[in-house]
Structures are given as structure tokens and as C-alpha cells.
Length: 300
Image 1 (cartoon, rainbow, N blue to C red):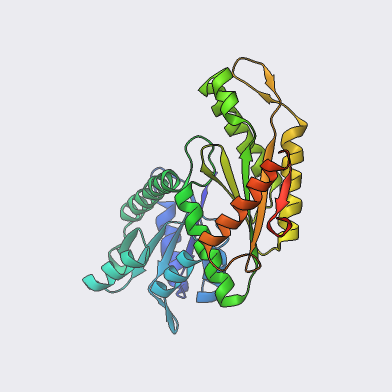
Image 2 (image 1 turned 90 degrees about the horizontal axis):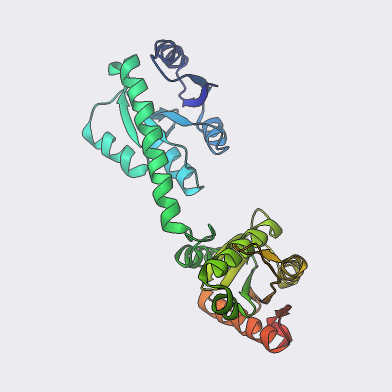
């Protein structure tokens, strides 16, 4: 199946020229789609539905450099190849600094050059995505790691300060996890953590973010929601974990429960560090009250 490529350029002639180049490619098959304005191009690019984007420098009164910056700020990961009629080195560097992966001068483009540039950008994008995953994901569970969780919390706190958007944090801990490792071994403990992570991910909303906080402790950032919504999500997670035992590598089925604590910003704190501390206190209370339950910070 042809890989979709987006061209953002207000020159219709450029679209016809690139279409002719695509037909002359020797290997990969691509399908060229186009957008002729900044706004249309930005909207299409942010869908994430394209393998790569060819972006013109000049887009009416606005330029492609700003479009790259806006798209990257919105979380765009589509590899971008910058197109321009200029040959000045400062344009090349500016495009790379903005987030483009390659740079082509329009008057010099050949089918072979364009095909090579697309292959290079796609391969580099795959490599960068793999590195980004290593930097932001927990290797065992696939959830966000602690560093990325801290970044997400700081970002949500900033959003709250600027726009007044409330959000909540759920801290979760596997009950009696040490006894799992002691009795069944660390491979069994790893299996439990992976399955708990999978069930947490299955229970939360697509807009929420789950992370491994450390050891057997997890966290869920519940965005654009109050503590009551987060408490309901935490209770559902606790119930779902307790409902079905976890299969160990030995084949044995082991009943598992978790405890959860909930805190919200700005209701319970004004900083990300204080929010973690408040949710952790609520988690401790859940442990003290018998485990396998969720406790709100205001119930302490």
C-alpha cells in the first residue's frame, strides 16, 4: 500500500512537479496529498495520518518554520522535509533547529534526491521514536517512566496556573508485593507488574497518563477532571485488579490487589511535588484501612 505523504505548498505547479518525481521513484510507493494554506496544512499534519511531510518555506504571509514550531509544540512526530527556493545556509540551519529532518532546494530536486530524502527522513524518524521511547518509557511495563511522569505533572501544573484546568493524581501500590518476590521469585514479580500495568492502562481514559512511579508503585495523571472522577477511576482499577488472578510464569494463578490514593490540584496542593505527597498520604491511608481500596486525600 502506498505510504501517504503530505505536501504543504501554495504553488500548484510544485505539486505537479513532485507528483511527476514520485512516479519516477525506483523502490518505495508513495501517495501525495496536498494542502495550499498554513491553516489547512497544519490541520492535516496534526492528524498524524502521514508517513512524512514536504513543507514549503513560504506560505503566503506566514512561513513554514513557524508551522514546524507550532506542529512540534502540539506533539507532531511526523518527519518533515523542508522545501525552499533559497540556498542560504541560515535557512538550512533554521529549518533543522525548528524540527525538520532534511532540507531540499526546489530548483535542485531530482526524483533520486527526493526518494533518498524521504527514505532518510523516515528511517531517522523511526530511530528518534525508538530513542524517545527508551527515554520516556519504563522498560518492564511499557508505561511512562518517573522522569516523564515528572515532566507531565509539571506541564499540567503550568496549565492549571495559566488556564485554571483542574487535574488529579492517583497513586497506586501492589499490596504485599514483597511476599510475591520472596515466595515465587522475581520473574513472578515482574509478571505481576506487567499485568497490573496492562490492566491500569485498559481502565483509564485515552487522555489520561499512566506511569510506573518506582518499584511496585504506579501513578495515573487524570487530566481535565476533578478528584471525584479520579476516585471513581481508582476504585474501578482496584476492583478490576482484584477480580481476576494473575498468571505467573509457572502457570499458577495468583490473586492480586492494589491500594490507591487520590489528590487533586489545586484543591489539595499548588505544586507537583506537593500533589505527589498528598496522593501518597492518601495511598498510605488506604493501606492502613485494609488495602484493596481507594482513598481520597480529603478523607484523611
